[in-house]
Every structure is written in structure tokens, then in C-alpha cells.
Image 1: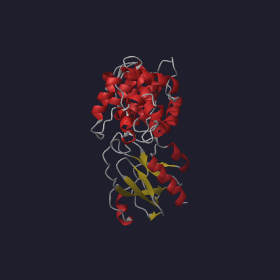
Image 2: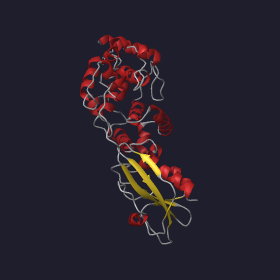
Image 3: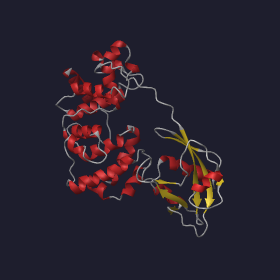
Image 4: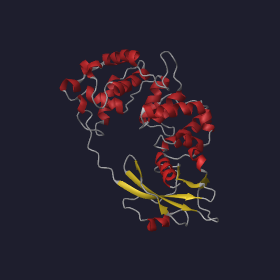
Length: 348
């Protein structure tokens, strides 16, 4: 099976994707860029990450610059990319590397896993791509390739350990970074989730899934439970000068540390406005706007109604007042940006 690595690397040398964080042949990888891209790519697509990566790199060109930035600035720059704990861990990791390691990342998986926000996959990817260390790098693309290559019919996530074991049997000692990126490229461009292009795959002859005619059905996955729906009411609270009230969410949990338009708790049952005002940021005459804001998280759907009210002259609610022209400067997650657009369209 060692010949498969050679076949794949030959294919990769001709067909590798050009990505903002990827070095050209013969260049030395920058661990900062590799780390930044791998953290951003966790549970996110290449298309979504590319503009964020470019913007981050233009603003913070090395780990010391990122470590010196206020965490609030990092959260604002991350807003819209999702999974916001990654942004907090990114900043925490930068501070550890800059302040305790002289700006140098550990060059092995064990050392990398000691840093905030770096798990098993990310440590392996950085070790292989940035430092040329042999490592078994397995993301969703690689799992799909291995499941098809070896015709593994056991459903995910139960099959993960077996797929990693199979991936380890192919990983070469030479060019580990290129091989890791080659397997990911193979899954992203040829061995795609639907309609895999088996006819042009460098591993076509060895693929058991293709031979058995089941490649497109692999990897098997257990049926996902239906996402529940939660509901809430958001309070678009206006000061006399037109500023709107925002507050910061708790540092832990969903959307941790991000800014939000104050809202009720999110629960399965619909809210009546009269009931919801007990959780409003202040006492006001609230009126509901027409329409709803809908957003889907990984584990549930969310439906939000928006209520508008004006603060009295002596109101001192918890949070900050933000002028409408500065809302874009706040670390508002995607769902709250939807709330802002809805309120601006319906309340004025």
C-alpha cells in the first residue's frame, strides 16, 4: 500500500489547490499561518475561511502582533465565522506562544496539544504541514477517502478509530505535510461527498468502495435526530439619541464573549410579550415588530421576535449604548447581525 502515497503525491504535485495559507513548492511553511488557518478551518469551509484568513494576516502579521491585540478586537474580526470559542482560544494560544515560548510554536504533536484550542487533529496537521513531522492527519475529507478506499461500512462516528488506523497505514515518513494536504485535496476535489469523480482518481484502481459500487454511499452515517426549535424575544432598546443597547454574553457557552442585542432566554415554548418583559433590560413600552429572525445552530433552530422600546432618561441598564453607525464595529455573531438588519428594516 506504500505505493498509494507515491501515487497521491504525484497527483498532488500536478493538481494541488492554491490556497491563501498554503506555501508554494519549495517554500518553507510558516507555523503561524498554518496554525491560524487550521484553527479557522475547524468545522468551517475553505470558502468561508479564505477572506477571514486574509484579513487577519493583513492586520496581525505574526503571533506576537495577535497576542498584543485586545481580545475584543479579535472577536470583532472573527464575527460571522462561527464557533466563537475558537476566537477566544486563538487569542489565548497566541499569548502563550508569544509570552512563554518566545514566539515559537512547539514542533511536535504532544507540545502543540498543550496549547489552548489545539486538539488531536489540529496538532497533527500543524506538526506535519509546518514542521514536516510524520503525523496521521484525519479530517472529514480524509475519513471519507479512507471509508471508500477500504469499503468501511461501519457508520460514523463509531468508525472514526478504524478510519484513523487505516489512514496511519498509508501515511509516509517523507513529505508528511504534502501528503496530509494531498489527502484533504483528494477528498475536497475528487472524492467528494456526492458524485465522486472516480474516473480521474489516482487511487481508483485500489478503491474497494468503487469496485463494490458503494463509494457514493460511504462513509455511512447514523441518521441525525431532528433539530429542535427554540424561541425568544430580542429587545431593540433605543436611547434618546438613537443609540441601541448591546451587552456581552457570558464568556462560556454558546456565542461566549460575543456582543448581543439583549434577549430573553431561548426556550422551546413561544413567548408572550407580556411575559417576556420580565427579562427585558429595562422597563419600557415594548412593541413587537412584524416578522421573525430565524437562524440555525448546530443542534437547534432559533426563532426570534424583535420588540422595540425606548429607554427613559434615567435608565442605566447593564451593557453599552452603541450608535447605529458603529454596529459594524461590534463583535456581533451572525444571528445578531440578522437581528440588526431586521430591526433596521422594520423599526424605522
